[in-house]
Image (cartoon, rainbow, N blue to C red; front, side, top):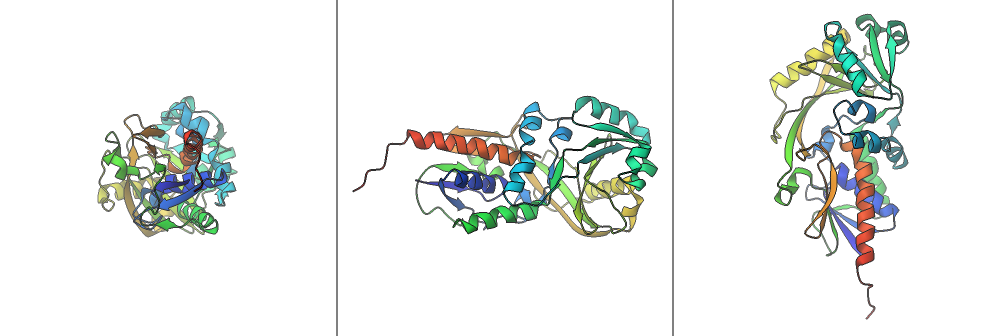
Length: 323
């Protein structure tokens, strides 16, 4: 039997990859033609940072997210294992203590130790939290790696299903027709080129009103993000959000003052009321959804759960009879 996967974003591509590893035939269906700017996966930060996410996320995110870096690397994505840094402005230094209490997997760096990683950050921050085992990737490259890996095995994105069978729904917000408790959480981002900035790894700037993360993409290019707005609106980035992002980046490192703005983007991420992603079955269809802001971190774990459920369902089906 061929399993139909609806949606070729990060959830659908990961699920298709995992099912093929188990020897299950799949057809991948997406009317938009595959990963691209029409999907929220395209605008992700790509941080594989389970311990940092533990500051506000459920413990299962921390536990299951630790699988992600190895999974992505095995799938052909370029994974950078440089850790994560968390800093705060001097006036907000209590935020760093609070973050440290709510997370694990970190060491505290003083100014001299931070200078060993980035002298510019040490000039502006007396201490930092370093999460040495965390990693990051470039989402668009990672999506392309999965798509190309599937194509090498004969699976390409089709506009519609060609055969009936078991369905795994990975459509994100489009699945609200069957999952009415899904909601949209809008996120905005900017991509900058700042050759004078040399951040060694993703950096999170804690701020009571304008938290920021910056992810290096290589060749002096950085992705900025952090907005989290309760809205399913998918229009362009707003001036207020862009100003907040760019101002926070400049406060982190003045080298961003001369940066070129390469791209601004926004999209809405699917989330359940408790912000926990899940694999569930309704009316005979398996759903992989609600990834919230943990798309690349949690998609591998959910793909494995979906594969286990598909295998169990296939075992329940009667054997095919030859004519």
